[in-house]
Structures are given as C-alpha cells and as structure tokens.
Length: 144
Image (tube, rainbow, N blue to C red; front, side, top):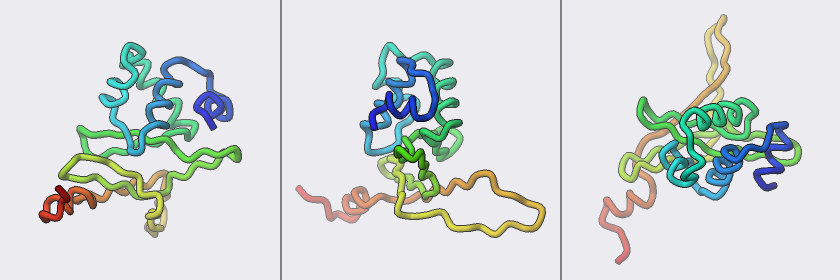
C-alpha cells in the first residue's frame, strides 16, 4: 500500500508534509529522527507542521515514536495492512556505538503484571547495547 492509500485508509487528509514524512519513513529500513526527516524533506519542513503531522500520524496508529532518552527520539512506520492492523508491540534496540535504532519486531514485549489498581496504556522497551555490525568491528572481526 502506498502512503496516499495509507492516509485514505486512516481517514487522514492528504497533505504535502504528511506524504513527505511517510515517504521518508516508508523508504527507510530503520527509524528516523526529526533531523533526518527534516534533511530528507527539505523545503517542506516546518517545525510546527512537523509536530502536528506527527501527532496526527501517531494518534491514528500509522507511525510510532521511540524515545531513547531526553535528546533522541525516532519515528517508524507501523505495519498497516488493508485490514488496518498495527503491529507496535515490539522491542527497540539502540546501538550505543553507531547510534542506530532498530525495530525488533520478532522480539515481543513481555506481559508485565501490575499491582491491583494499576492499568497499562503503553509499554515501551528499548534495549541498549552494541549491534551486530558494530560488535564485529569492535571485536576486530571486520572484513577488509
């Protein structure tokens, strides 16, 4: 499904900034930060419009926000199908060496049992460490 069809299926108006943001996320293999998206969309970037667009896209479940720390936030496109399924119940990995953030859709978030009187709205899990590519390089196993 292309991004314009995605917007239609989520009953969102097609705007140039939304289409540009979704195209960046759709064409990227890894989540993108605001500055990465800004660089990719160029003149279409406006800070207020960006945050309004992101809020709308998150609210309808088209994208998800990954908060690594107070200074690093990334965004990723959700797996939306014609049946309007959003698969966001997964772990994220942050490589402390190369600073990449990856969605690990094969690693599901565990069910946390909360004390009585508490209810879960969201559960974000970010594992921080060294990715496979950096691990090989750090251990001296890189290929020449």
